[in-house]
Image 1 (cartoon, helix red, strand yellow):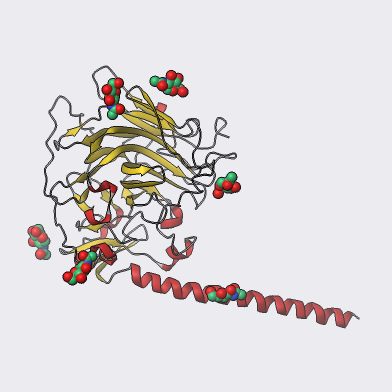
Image 2 (cartoon, rainbow, N blue to C red; image 1 turned 180 degrees about the vertical axis):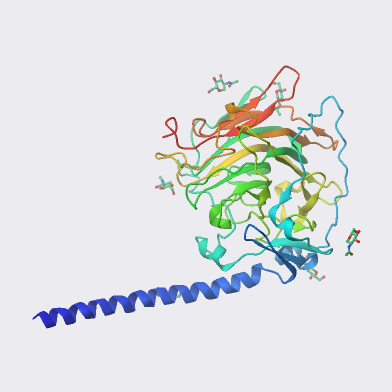
Length: 426
Ligand SMILES: *[C@@H]1O[C@H](CO)[C@@H](O)[C@H](O)[C@H]1NC(C)=O
Ligand SMILES: *[C@@H]1O[C@H](CO)[C@@H](O)[C@H](O)[C@H]1NC(C)=O
Ligand SMILES: *[C@@H]1O[C@H](CO)[C@@H](O)[C@H](O)[C@H]1NC(C)=O
Ligand SMILES: *[C@@H]1O[C@H](CO)[C@@H](O)[C@H](O)[C@H]1NC(C)=O
Ligand SMILES: *[C@@H]1O[C@H](CO)[C@@H](O)[C@H](O)[C@H]1NC(C)=O
Ligand SMILES: *[C@@H]1O[C@H](CO)[C@@H](O)[C@H](O)[C@H]1NC(C)=O
């Protein structure tokens, strides 16, 4: 009897082992083959590789062999090597005083080398990056809108922002929480801002937190295009909690297009100095030194390409005109601020992922994350403080927005951010 039981038990154990090995083998062989193929497609041959102290490998890739040219619309594209326009400088009395701590942006990998002329630095994607992704198709992208447009969770109530004496409704997704300064009502062909650099904490690898400047145009809340840039902490994508430079675009309201760096074909990089997706330093210190990076996005009126500049006058590359539809002529709104993506925003228990510095906007300079000197560009090619602005926070008790005016006649500074879950945001 005992012997029989033992035999049955052994048989069950054996079957289980065989089954689980089978499933594992099936899964891992399929995955590793797909992962290898995907890595071959994504990583272009390097002329030189630089090992960064943060663990990244930066590949210097021939500028003509960069991922952009995998895009069907860019088959015969001729690279525009530099912007063909100059913005009119601001008159001194409207210009925001440069903050004393402002400095040239640095990326960690730059300590260990430079990319040669004729190449661009690209953060190498490794198999562990792909294995962390929920799927190979979604790798590198923001999560698509969570639900169908008829789903009541898509549009949340009371999403009104007060601009130019009018309450304007803003679309808002159930899995994203923003705290922004927004302007609309004109056609914009550029925008910029000085982004304070922090390193907010992220609770779960599924969450990410950003600070950015975003330009948008479209027909409706689920049919629009954006170009955007700033910094992001995104552990699922990058495998760590470092603050990294990103440049995002979508032509279908995040449904299937877009990515944070050069992972998806589209953005044409011209700079040999900065790498999208690579970490930025140094971070600001609570009550201590503040660091910032100036980011700018401008439509080149001669070529129709949207140029990205990061740091003082440093053109990084552009989104080619042929990628875009609504944004071919101009943007119709500009947003500055932060966003937390998480399955656990707008619900209880709320995510503890923080935004900005992790402190509320009301804690101001040295504590809260700021965006200084927000500017728009109109057809006169002049930089201007936007005529009408509104502030908006999806969940003001979790992440707040405050356009602070220190004294009459002094230009406001936009502060945003917060701790996420806390007694007021359970
Ligand atoms: C093995 O992989 C194939 C192809 O992806 C799939 O159709 C099948 O369901 C998998 N089998 C198991 C046991 O997971
Ligand atoms: C690229 O050039 C070829 C040959 O002239 C042409 O057939 C093709 O349509 C062009 N592709 C694009 C996207 O313009
Ligand atoms: C790289 O280009 C710069 C600017 O055009 C030039 O000054 C420099 O000499 C070039 N370096 C090499 C190694 O060709
Ligand atoms: C709306 O979408 C959410 C998230 O996908 C889902 O849980 C919910 O059941 C949907 N509601 C309706 C009415 O379809
Ligand atoms: C805008 O909305 C707020 C809050 O709902 C309301 O108090 C205010 O009267 C509205 N203003 C206008 C001009 O509609
Ligand atoms: C802003 O408000 C003014 C005065 O109410 C109005 O004339 C103008 O059309 C508004 N502009 C926009 C873009 O809504």
